[in-house]
Image 1 (cartoon, one colour):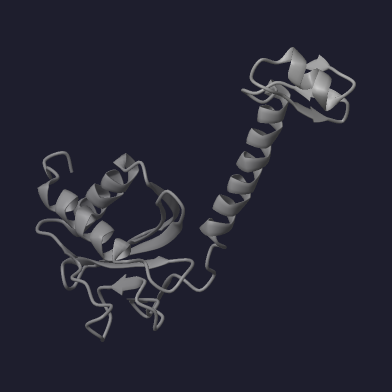
Image 2: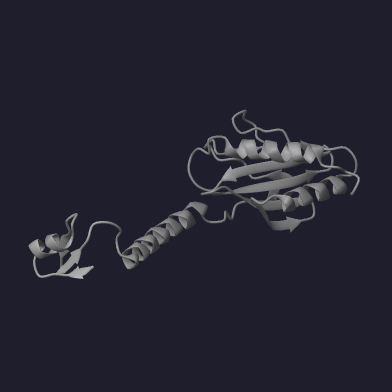
Length: 185
């Protein structure tokens, strides 16, 4: 920056022309580093606020009641192996062998996923948060000893549609569960 008195003096000092603001001659090119830092800080603050808003509040209505997981809402952003309607229904995780060993395998699988955090664990029940770049979804897993399967539910916290993300993620978990070795359990 060059301190100048008039716009004409500013232009004379700069071969490519300059801009006179607040008595300071700004030469063409990059903005001052302090301006870039302030702008970057404001943008990061706005983005952080928006991303935090996308996670939503942890639901308080989840869990098992009478051997069933909470029903899906009418919106298409939820899948449930115990659902009565085709729109929300997904197959449970099936297994052979000991039920407790299968559930331990599922816990280990979730612990290995970088997008999953188990937030509640009771005998035969797990609740996890599954993250995407912008959103947090809630997943539940219920051991069904009689049917020799693990009932599953996954739902978005926010929005109406998830564009099939919960279903795709549960199918990924199913495939990983299917091919995971059982010898360690």
